Image (cartoon, rainbow over all chains, first blue to last red; front, side, top):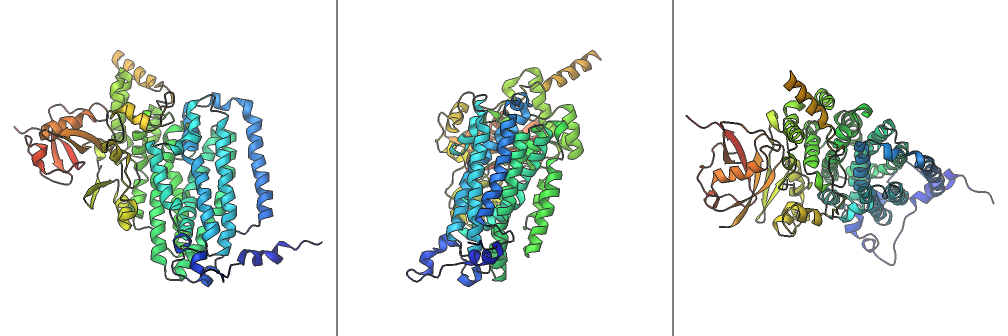
Length: 501
Length: 88
């Protein structure tokens, strides 16, 4: 029997829809899950995905791609790349896998919501493939790190992190729960695929792939490049949904979802990708600064994507552009100073040569973040290690769940953005975080940040030991300086030279 | 006498921090408690200066001997801890 050509049946298959007769439309597509925005069924049938693929095509392409990534891994398993890698690079892998692998698996459930509940048949088809993508990404990013678990306990956090109360995971879960686990199908398509994946997974996966290849980690480079090609396909699920919303008078609601998701994604990547690109990746392997990468790959692309769509730039765009030079330096300093509370070993990244690079990329760095680092460096050089660790908690934002920070030293501009709501005092890290809360206070009001939990007596005993136990950080997993402070030798030598002179 | 949490925004530092004080503590004692977590860790001491406390955004410092209980500060409210050259 002859097989029909793909184009002879594709449009019929992708636009096939239900016409319920035994149940109502609302029973078939409960509004809370479908997110129909009050639009009739036929409005959603106009959904036209830009990237069309059939299931047999998907299987064939993915099979080949996965085989490629797995065979690079198999070929390099005996290469001792992990053993010989710079400790800063190992930290990149640990941070990435812990923060991302299980999140990908969770994203399969969000894709599944679009697959079942979206009223747009084309979206259901695309999301079926997107759901399979996310299952595969979860599996691959658990399988790849697994070979290193026997060598390094922190690698176990690839699987473990998502189930813990580590502060970084509370932040990641708060964001992903907000944009993908607790939203209707259409909102998921806007917030997860259009806002988060189009912009920010590009950064984590493209930027990191370039650094991985430079660092000689071809297994990791291949894995995440392969994942990124899937992401760029299923990231296109949200665009056509936005188009329908805008055409049907729902622009304001669509814009709000974009604005909320883009901000949350930015904050998360400022703590995850910013330190990796500007501090952990060995200097000689850095392709671009985090800011340069953001400006080229995220800002420019986003501006184009938003205006092409007929949306506005988020109202806080100027704040965002300014923060590109600032926020991640604070996130790095914070995760370094509170290093016992993370599952990787942060690389300080502040040798004189690295500071020259930071000063070149971020003029004024030495007079601001550098001033804090000067004190840390002196303590390390003097062996005054007690003062190189914290004795209290940083105050974290009730929206992004990350430390509330700003520029220190001569550019000191640190500020709290408080809000009293129903008798409780909330603290936010920016005007935007507070604005997100104000859009739907009851959605967020009940959540307790790690500091709120500490003050509520949920962390016992109320000291570092209690905090580490609460965060599920077992002995041998606690973070410390990636290079065991070897970088401080150059400062020790400089001091000796000065004395001798 | 009761434990009272405040949020310290220390001049020259990069992050807000939780500071546990007592309702009977004076503003000088609040400043000293905040300094423990910033000075010598990420902020250099400034010889010849004292530390003053003010509400975020306020121009005036709270009196040095004022007690937390009398300050009107709310639990976890953010105070700015500012270096000052003593007069005269």
